[in-house]
Length: 290
Image 1: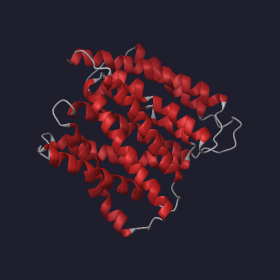
Image 2: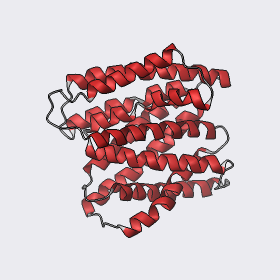
Image 3: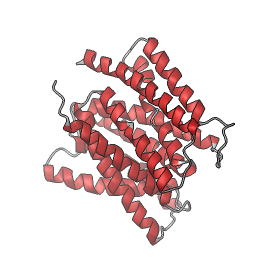
Image 4: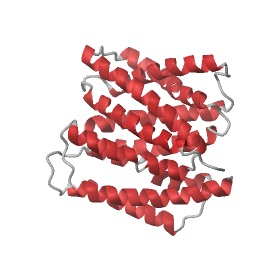
């Protein structure tokens, strides 16, 4: 199958918009709970996507409802974890941990599609985790202390993102992209309504501006991501998505005044190498399945 180069640009735009979403999350007052931010984001996305689906006159419930619901649950958990880690860690570090998800995809491929454990997978895991250990080195000299629980949540977000990634890849072969996008906020809204209702906190005007930004940038990023995943091998998609680490680091430096240490640079290189090796493995799997 010939790959349209526009699909690569879709993923570049997705990375840019998702990185801008993280800026909005970090700008919001910490008095607004994470689940409320996810709820606002989901309501915005659900309204926009539902309007598009109605105009396209397609079945609003899709074909594979079970997997669509699972994708929605995974996306909700992942987004909660991502928002939490963004708020409680330097933006550059939370972003690079989030983008360990291609390595987790390689791990899950062993169990979900019965791949064998080979040298490439072992090497990718070693490089990826070695890079993370360098970045999170507790003995490095920094002006901040990394919250260990936030690190755990960030990795949980990476794991659930990898599972959601696999679900989107499978669903994109038979579902309209906007049906896939719709189920994410639909499940989020249904899941979070009771929690938000019981613990409501009214945002200030300034916070509302950033909340609207979350909705706009996430919707744009999700749309471009799904378009890119529809026609690109998983390996290329994962590698291009890693651009968000660069964007996140730039915003961390220029907007939030974060210091990029030599440990972060070296560690990120190791993580990137592990990602490239692991996604090369995924690409071979894609070719075998086609």
